[in-house]
Length: 288
View 1: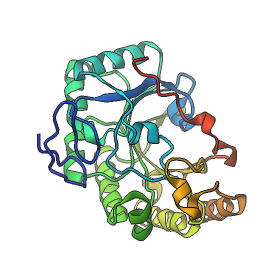
View 2 (view 1 turned 180 degrees about the vertical axis):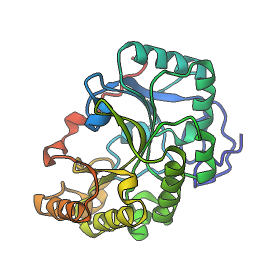
View 3 (view 1 turned 60 degrees about the vertical axis):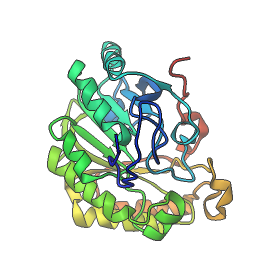
View 4 (view 1 turned 90 degrees about the horizontal axis):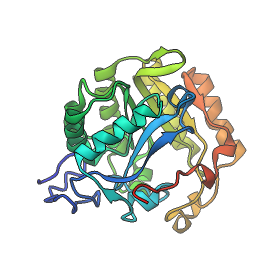
C-alpha cells in the first residue's frame, strides 16, 4: 500500500514488514502486551490498563523514552487475528480497557483485528497527537477514549526536537476530531469510559512551551477535556546531543507550569516529580 495514514504522507509502498517514515510494515509489530498500572488512575484503576505497545513511530522525538521500540527496530510481527486473540487474553486478566499505544501507523490493522473480536471494554487510542484527521475519521464509532499528547505550542521547538514544523496546528485539528467523535469525559466507578484526556510532558528549559500548550487547551476546549501534566522527563535517546534538554526538569520549572494549570482551572492530573525515573519505562518483552 502507498501509505498516507499519518501527516508525513510519505506515500511509500508499505509491505507486511517494510515501511516508510514510521519504520514498520503493515503487520502489527508488538513490543509489549500486558496490564499496565502506571497510567492515570482513571485508566489503570485496580486491574490495570490493557496496553498494546506497538513498535515504530511517525514522530520520532529525539528524547523518546521508548526509543528502543519507536526507532530501534525492536518488536515481533503478528497478524491482526493474533492481535484480536491478545484482546481476549487481556480481557480475561481483568483489565479495565484495551489501550493502543502509538497506533497511528496501524489503524487499518487494528480495524481488521476488531472484526475478529471486539472487546467488551473501552478502547483507548494513546498517541503523539500528530495525527491526520482523515485517518482518525476511520475510527469514528470505534474508539471510546482518546489519549493524545499535546507536546508543543512552539513549532520551532517541534521542528528541532521532533522534525515536524506543523505540530501545534496538526495536533489541535486532530484533537478537535477526537472530541467530535467521543464528546466530554464520561466517568463510571472512578474509571474513564469515554472522552478525551490530553497529556503534556514538561521539557527542561521550555516552560514557555508548556504554558503555551495549556493556554491553547483552555482557549479551545476548556472543560470538554481532561489534562494530564507529566513530569516524568529524563534525558534518553538522543537528548545528550541537545544541551537544553540533557537534564531533568527542576522543581522551579515544574511549579511554574503547575501554577498555570491551576490558574486556568483545567481539570485532570499532575504527576509528582519522582515520576522521572527509568524504572517506570515498561520492559519490552513481547515474544520472549
